[in-house]
Amino acid sequence: MGNHIPVLLKDAVDALAVKAGGRYVDGTLGRAGHTKEIIARGGMVLGIDRDEQAIREVGDVAGLTVVRGRHGDLVEIANERGWSDVDGILLDLGVSSPQLDEAGRGFSFLRDGPLDMRMDRSGGQSAADIVNFESAERLEEIFREFGEVPNARRIARAIVAERIPRPFRTTIDLADFVERVVGRRGAHHPATRVFQALRMEVNGEMGELERALEGGLKLLKSGGRFAVITFESLTDRTVKRFFARHVGKMVSLQQGGERWEGEEPKMRAVTGKAVVASEEEADLNPRSRSAKLRVAEKE
Image (cartoon, rainbow, N blue to C red; front, side, top):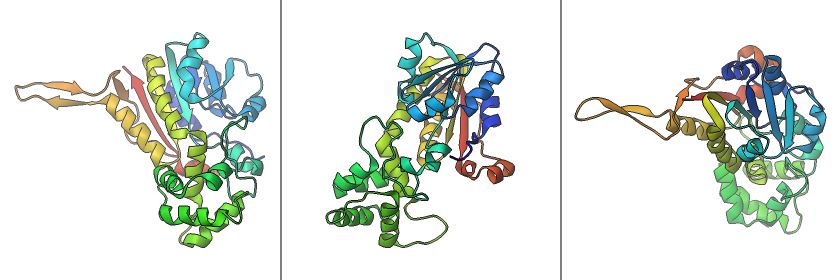
C-alpha cells in the first residue's frame, strides 16, 4: 500500500482555526492525517468513516473518538455521543489514496481488480452489479449526472450489448471496453469519468454530501468553521452553492437601505475563491492537483 499523504493538510487545519480543547468532527477520517494535526494543535476529534479497514489502520489515537458510519449521518452520530455545538467540521471527499492503491477495492483502472468500488464492503451493490444489471437508460443517467460523461448514451448502450455474452468482472474489463467504444484523445483515459460516476452511485456520495452539509451546519456552534475538500467539479459546485446560499448577499431596497438575503443559519465566507494546492504540494502529491478547499464560518 502506498504512503497516504493528506491533501491540503496545513491549509485545511489552519482554516479550522483550531482551539485548545475545542471539539471537531472529521466526517471522512480515512487514515486520520488531518485529524492528527487537529489533535496536535490541541483539539479533540470525533472521527467518522464507513471503511472498516481504514478504521483498523488508524488504531487508538489519544484525543480521537472513532465511529464507523457515514458522514451523511454525522448529526445523529455526534448527538448520540454528546457532541453537539462543535467548533469545526472537516470533510475530505472522494476516494482515499490507500483505497486507490489497493487493486482489490476496484476503485482504479490503473490496477486490475474486481469491479467493486464499495467504501463499506459489508453490503450493498458493487459497481459490477450496476454495470451488469441496470438498464441502458439508468446507466446513461448515472454517467451524465455523476460523471458528466461525454458520449454517455453511446457508452451505456454499448455496455448493455456487451454484457449479455460476457459480463464485466474487473476494472480493466470495463476501462478497456470504454476505450474501444469511444477511442482515446488527450491525456485523460476515457473511462475516468465513467469510474467516477459509478463510484458516486455505488456509495451514494452526492446524497451523503448534501445531508452532511445540512446536518453539519446545524451541529456547528456560532463561530464554528466548516471546511470541505473536493476533487471533482460536481462536488465542488455543490459545496460552493451551499455555502453561497448561507453566506447570502446584501440587497438594496427601493425605499432606501438594504437587507440581507440568504438561507438561515447565516455563514461568513472564510475562503473567497477555493484554495488549491501549491506547486510544491502538487509535485509531491499528484492527487492534490484536483483538490479544492472551501471554508465558511457559522455566524
